[in-house]
Amino acid sequence: MYTSYIGKKFLKIYKEKENKPENYSAKEFFEGEMFPLFFQDGSHLMHVGNSPFFQKTKEEDNIKFGSKSLAQLNNLQKKIEVGIPSGSIYVGYGAEEIQATSSGQLTSLNIIINETEIYSSWIGEALAIGINGGFVMLIDEEEVLLKIYKGWSNYRNFLSQTPKLKDKQIETWNGHWICQALSLEDLNDFNYSKIETAEVVGNIAIPTQRWSEVLFVFAKKYPLKVLTVYAYTLSQTNTTLGFINLYLPDVRRMFELRDKLFLNNNETILNDKEIETLEPFYRFNEACKMGAIGLKSIEPRGLREFMSKGTVDYASGKDYKFTDEKSITNFQLYKLWIIAMLNKTELLKLATDVASALSTHETQDTKENRGKSEKSNLVKEILESKNLKSFIDSLTSIITKENAYIFKSVVEEILKMPSDNFPLFATLIRFEYIFLKKN
Image (spheres, rainbow, N blue to C red):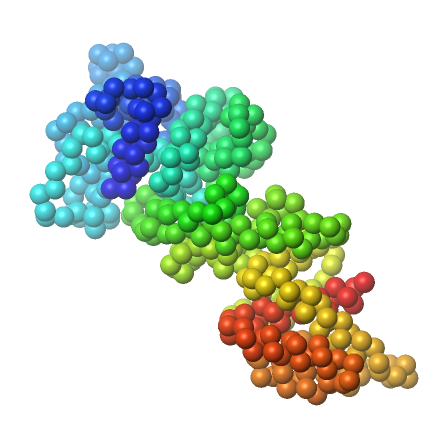
């Protein structure tokens, strides 16, 4: 199981950092580091379904070993020594019996699963990053693993100091912790107040991080890397999304373009937090279906409402309305993502020029015409074009000496674009036109 791989990978790093002997084992780490922190207290940091830490103990065992938690530890040790490996002791593995719902991982092959594999799986799971949608990610990156480990004790402190806080959320905690920790030189500067809690059936819980926010944080920290994550969820039925590449240089482009295009314009500055909290159109499992996660995966939710009908699924062709600060921020996020997808900064100026030419053409109607003018209708047809042909045909119908060069330039440019980019560029023109009309 990949939980074991990550656990063993971390243990190797840990031994080097802490000068532990080469024979220092996963069992020793679990019993010396994890058990006192995760399970000795009545509130646990991690949940492994049907494990001995999830089950009641006999009162005589509690007396014999000194406490309920020590009795549970003894039960776990015994099951690992003599029991059949299953998800209750080998984290991420299948069920013990073929009739169970997560029995798909069972095999008739005589695969030996030793003690090191089992204890390592507990370590690996404790290093997983929880994201919204119920999924977790494991990342084979030394700095990330070490920083997550250093956040375990902080979670215990946060749990102890926050009344009615739900326990057993280590993966969720890791998501919040790593989003701050990767940018901190001193982990003591971690800001607990940034962790918002939500009410859940009379108690409070830490909500999972938005997967796109975790992606943005990684993109800022590792702007030149392609990280591979293993994504899955453990429940009554285990679900594996598999190994997914995170194309961080593509995602980083949004920050780079913000600095290049928008930084000197006070009305269009987006701070890092506004970018990082972008809500994506795709859920995480849907994004994974693309085969890799990059810029396309973080298409902003709501953008398609303002794309011309028929250009992409769920496009509504609505006119954008500026109603409050949030609407202005979203407008800039939409534009920034589109420009990053087009990957050609000159297209912003070209879209602005086309929008200006359309606006100028529309205002040339005579003042006597109080209703919908012919020129306004023609401009509307251009802005609502469903495909490249209708866009060019509509442009041709209003070409004049004044706008001929701009229209010629835009046609030449879009003919060179991949077909998937036309709806995005057409939307950029719509946005620039709406912005000009507003101002």
